[in-house]
Image (tube, rainbow, N blue to C red):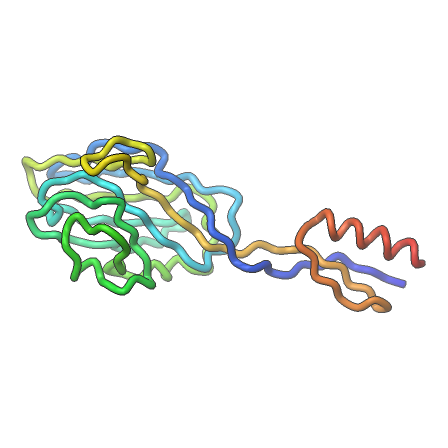
Length: 197
């Protein structure tokens, strides 16, 4: 009797990665922040939480770049002369486009360009968030989780991935195919199959 250890994609799960460090959003310049992602499978869905203090939100244009170089504009010059992005969630499935929203953008909004552009990619590596402030005299601040913000404790700027990872299963011509949830179960089945030889 022959057995073989094979793989099957698991159901998707979500993992959250916080910005490596928050900091000042400088006026009339580009401020760059990073996320370090590891241990994740292929992207099936990506959401971005943007948590920032800024007067005149419309000064800002924000880009996200993946480790392999795919870059999209998340939004540009939204919110008019109002203030802040209060733990704003950018989600392709949100009902309201961020271009139709109002500051401080509480809740979920569709980004200006779909985050599905990253689907199918390996997310592991360094992601870059670039914040362009087009006008002088108005600085801001990008928050990490737990930072004190004007509205209270910030949820922080985050990437939230849904991804898939391989799950082992054993195949036996006599017993058929069994799908298992982890290495321990696969190893146990292999021992049982070997005893039947």
